[in-house]
Amino acid sequence: MSNSTNVRIPFVDLTIQHAPIQQELQQAIQSVLAKGDFVLGQALKDFEIAFAMACGTEQGVGVASGTDAIALGLQACNIGAGDEVILPANTFVATLIGVLRAGAKPVFVDCDPKTALIDLEAANKAVTPKTRAIIPVHLYGQMVSPLDLLKFAETHNVLIFEDAAQAHLAERDGYKAGGIGIAAAFSFYPSKNLGAFGDGGILVTKDADVAEKMRRLRNYGASYKYCHTDYGTNSRLDTLQAAVLHKKLPHLPMWNAQRLNIATLYDLELSPLASSGIIPIENQSGTGHVYHLYIIKIEDNCSIKRVQLQEKLNSNGIQTGIHYPIPCHLQPAFTNLGYQEGDFPHSEKLAQQILSLPMYPGLSSSQVKEVVAAIGFHSPLLTPNQR
Image 1 (cartoon, rainbow, N blue to C red):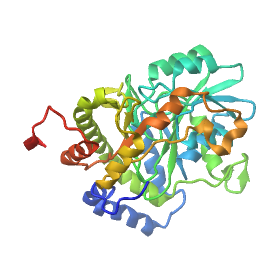
Image 2: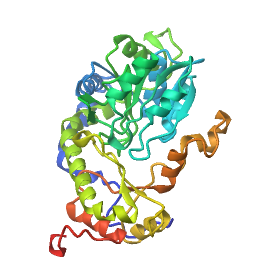
Image 3: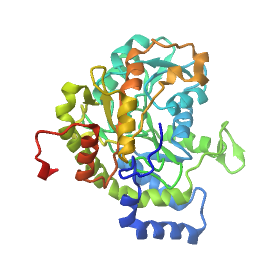
């Protein structure tokens, strides 16, 4: 697909949220520069506590990326060689890589075509005596049902390890993302709902032993300096990044609320298109959905194909994305896992249908309406003047 030379509505625009708090961010950075504690410094410790509390947990361990939060987090939960871990085929490849790096065997299951979240009925059928954990991926900002997950874990005596990389402060069934299972991994990639100025991640947990092992694993496996009790690595959230994230954290509820408002308007504007084959991914979480991404499906009965629609929007200066175009089980790097096309039809179908529309705090109502208008339809619920 060609790139638009005149981007009027970007897929993501971080400048809008950063501009009003620029002075706060600069002060946070200057504070770290003055102290010089760039690795495992005080700002990191402060942020770890604050973020864990925001998730309804007690312990936070900052690491270099969300992928490391999964890989090291699973190890901290004593999951490794000989263990099977259930995960959805419809997820970013980092979930899979985390399982493989922990030494466990990934066992894919299909997704629910309405929500794109893991199908727990399919997961029930995938459990074996070797199953140690399930990774519910809270995809696009919507949590997998905590009540259903807890029932699943109790039935099969397995651990819940949440991939909450896209679900900062999401809620469902009275639970917050990160507060359901033994531990949860978050990413602070810049475009996330809470994003750093580079890569970063965190593991949150209520289990002090898991947290302590995680601290060792991220720091060369050291119980204390030069005493290495675990086979660890170097994966620490930089103090500078933690300081930035801590300053942004109090603004996150407002930013999430803006995302929900934007999604609500998208839903309204797009509703007349349902009969034409344009269907948003279903929200089953109400106001607990934090909409890291806003996804529509272009179904088979639609008069325009996805590639044509994406080109059309691009030619109008509107950037879009696809999350994700190739399911994990069909990625070329992982053919050794033994999966093939047709194994998970819902995930494979979604990969051909989904399109991510612009979504970020500060996206205006007029821009949302412009995006929908560029798709080629107009909502009968609003007059031209209201547009």
